[in-house]
Length: 239
Image (cartoon, rainbow, N blue to C red; front, top):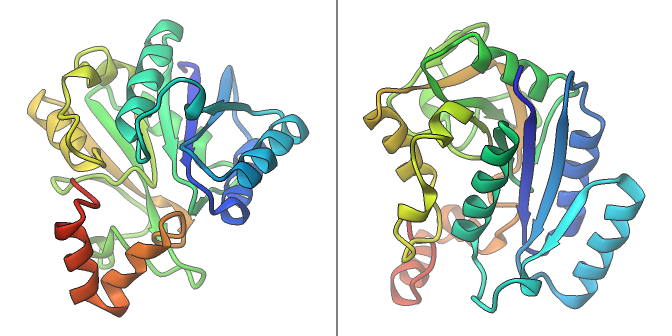
């Protein structure tokens, strides 16, 4: 088993993020691992809360305001820093977003599942709601067998995904388009283009409250016209 570098990017939404943090820190993981939260220009009050929780719960906190003046979102920078650190440590990289809550054994079993599949580029947990029903972004898998693992052609969201060290070693994130905001679609496609398979683990569901970390995106469901108007006129949510 390779070491695990686990990361959570966050901007405000601290209450939901704290649930994510507590679940990860309580994980049953064998071997070497570290957990880093990347604070992407949260308010001063929320930054102070994250600094308090970092001491209380024992995770590493990186305030992006200390290393860049580029406005949020800074997902690309987070991915680039995390890739470099993972490669230096010979580690797999696990991304758990701040609106996701993992089970105690999720990350260990995800890592084990990736390790026994030498062709694995990305290993992703399926996402579910409070009623255990598969939800965004994996609605296409609602009829799949919940006991199985599937190689999927659709992209793996970074809600809860492991990027293997093998894949990280072959694709430099510094090559990605800096004009985008989110990169799960591109990285999923790149993984497959390089000959890897991306696996969706139906047997390792995680609780997902879609867009809990970016409340404005709820407009996609409540007022789609307003969502797409904001997206295109204000340059938000570039994928």
